Length: 240
Length: 233
Image (cartoon, rainbow over all chains, first blue to last red):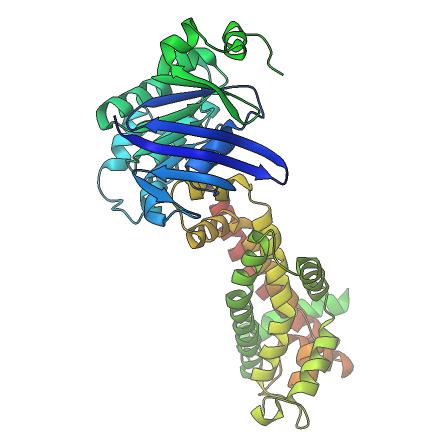
C-alpha cells in the first residue's frame, strides 16, 4: 500500500515547546487512521499540519509522493478537507453552505453534486433553511457534506461527533465508512471516543504530549497494547 | 407650536409645488452625499476588512487609534482643512474645486471614510475567528477567505454604510466652508437651513429640516430592510 503522507523528524514548536514531535509516521493511502489521546496531546495541531494550514517548524512531510517544503500549493491543499468539532456555517441556506466547497474550488455548482450530498446526509428537506438555525447534529452533517462535495483525496476529522447524539454519530460514521470504501478516501479521525476509533479505524494511534506513543492495527491496539500508556488509555485510566 | 405647524404646512407646500430651487437643493444634497458615500465605501470597505482580518498588521497599535479618532472628526475642522488644501494657495488649488460640489464631495468623503473603515473593521473582527480557518481547510485562497468573511459581516458593514450616510447628510460645517452655500451651485439642505434661520425664516428652515429628515429616513429605511433581509438569510 502506498503512503498518502510520510512524516520524518516532524516537529512543530512554539519556542522551546514542541506540541507535535513525531520522528516518523506513514499514513497509508486509503486507510482510516484513528488518533486518540488526552486534550492537549497535539492531535488537532497535527491535523492542521496535515491540511497544510501551517507548515511544521522542523522536519519533512511528503504528501502523495511529493515533498512539501514550506507552504503547500493551492492545488495540493484542495485535495484535502477538514471537518471540525464545532462547524462554522455561513449565514446562508443549508444548500449554499454545501455548495460553498465547490464554489471555492471554482467547480461547477449547477451539477447535481450538492443535491446528492444533501440527500445522502438526510438534509434535502432542510436545503432552503437558514444554516444558523440547525441543531448541532444537522450542522455537523452540513459540514461533512461541504467537505465531501469536492471529492477530496484526504478527509481530516477533528472530533467530528464530540457534541452529537447517538443517531447523528451513527449517521456520520456510516458516511465516513462508505466514503472510504467507495472512493478510497484517506481519512484521519481525531476522537476522544476510543470506541469510535475501534469502530471506524483501520489503524489507531495514541498521542500524548505531542508524541505518538503507539500506532498499531486497531484490533491489536485495543486487544494487545504494547505500551503501558496505551494499555491505561484503553482501560479508561487518566493519562497525565 | 404655531411655527412647527406652519413648518409642516410649508414643507408639504414646497413638496407639492415642486419648487424648482428646492428640487435643485435636494438633488444636489443627494448627489454630493451619495457620491461621497460611494467613494468612501469603495476605499473604506477593503481597507477596513484588511485591518480587521490582519491580526499581525505592522503598526496596528497606531493605525487603530488613528481610525477611531477619524471616526469622530469634527466636520467643521475637515471643512477648514479641505478649504486650505483646495484654496488658491493650497497644494490642490490648481484643481479649482473650492466652492464647487467636487470640493464638497472631497470634504464629505474625508468625514465618511474613517467611519466606514472603523465600523467595517469592527464588523469583520466580530466574525468568529474559526470561520477563516475552516474556509482555508476547504481550499479557499486568502482572497476568498476575505470575501467570505466580509459577506458574513454584511449586517455590520451595512451599519457602517448607515452611519457614514447619516454623518454626511446631516453635517453642515464642512459643506458650508468648502461649498460656500452659493444658490444654484453649492447650496444643500443643511446650508439652506442655516441661511433661512439666519434670515429669520424659521418656518421655511424647519420645512427644509423636515425634508432632510424625510430623506434620511427613507434612505435608512431602505438600508434597514436590506439589513433585515441579510440577517435572516
